[in-house]
Image 1 (cartoon, rainbow, N blue to C red):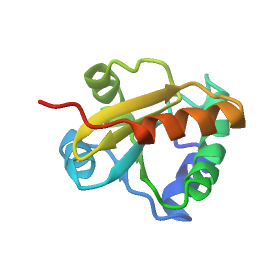
Image 2 (image 1 turned 120 degrees about the horizontal axis):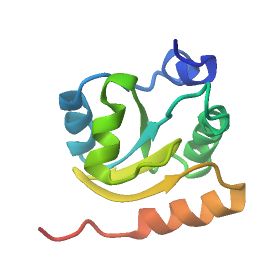
Image 3 (image 1 turned 180 degrees about the horizontal axis):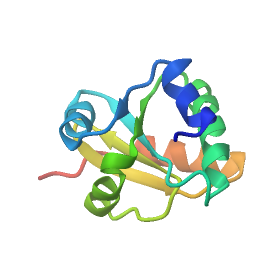
Length: 127
């Protein structure tokens, strides 16, 4: 069962929710900056609901500089393993198919603002 605040991200805001890794990869490979919300277990981790409320506010504060999606339970472990971001809830940032940064756990607003601004300023690593 999904937490209502996580469901709200797709139901109210229309953000995609992914339950297969192919969809995650296709989404993050698109041009632009994308944030994957990896919620973790909202029953065991009360911070999950907090981040589900904070992320739409961050998106608004950064005026559309990134879009957002939710990682479903079916692929959450694979996303965490692929990115080496093991703590949840987490926000994982991608630009043009490459991970550019992550913010694990809940933070205070000023920390989010500074971290997101820093991540958005990072270039994609050369391959």
